[in-house]
Image (cartoon, rainbow over all chains, first blue to last red; front, side, top):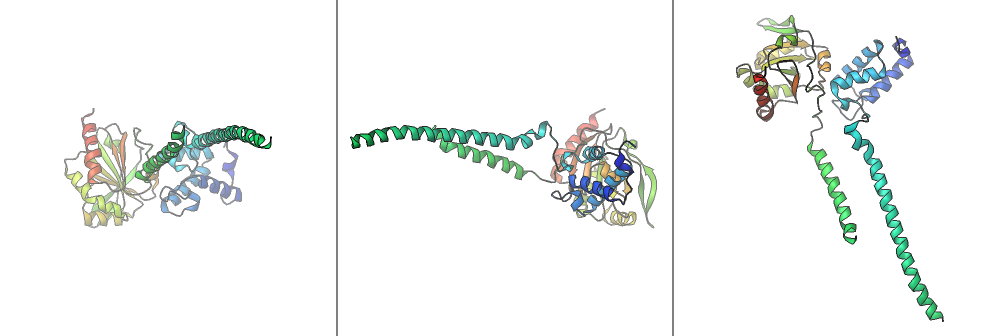
Length: 131
Length: 185
């Protein structure tokens, strides 16, 4: 098999670690906010068994995820993929950060200008008093 | 410029409120099915034969035999409360001159229990197949019973309903679509 991981004996720690890592990335669809690894719902157990079956067949992590996405859609992945319909999701926070940064700079510049405009008349008034 | 200072936070708040409002109005269980417009996964499962002396597995059945027909694939189980809720509606659909035909998958259920349930509540299905291991349900991306798929004459999934089928969903969405598909060649 092309994937060296597939030859791991089922009870080995590396095999269990791989199963755990995979099922942590997959959503339990019944409980939605739990991963497959955390869930004991019956469907989650079935899906975990399915993941294990694919592992023993020598499928790669990517192939196993594709198998589940074909059946359950992107929703089954805890980490949504980067694609056109998730652009807002991935880009949104950065766009907001940028907008916030620009707004902050503008506000700063305005207070600086206002301060500069204020200091001059005050200074001249003070000088007049001193003279 | 001064006006903007007052209205900008309000506008931002409204935008946020609209987004959150839209999010709230959606049912988190309505997960879009990746099967709409694609061929229904094929399978071969034993049928459930219900007779006076119990229920047992019968000959193997496969969706290929539905070619040229519009049909509903309903995933249910005798253990499923929602299935009892939608049952009267399914019975009504079954009476309506076999469009669409109703096929049931007894999902993760004991054949004996499925049989008892059908005898007690009536059997609206043309055929019921037994999926004890839940393998076929996984192929259909099922995550809870009941779920209903509308499949066209070419074996393509055209609609999916998650949860108990309601009169409204049937009359407004599935029935008109089934009638339209029936006219297709």
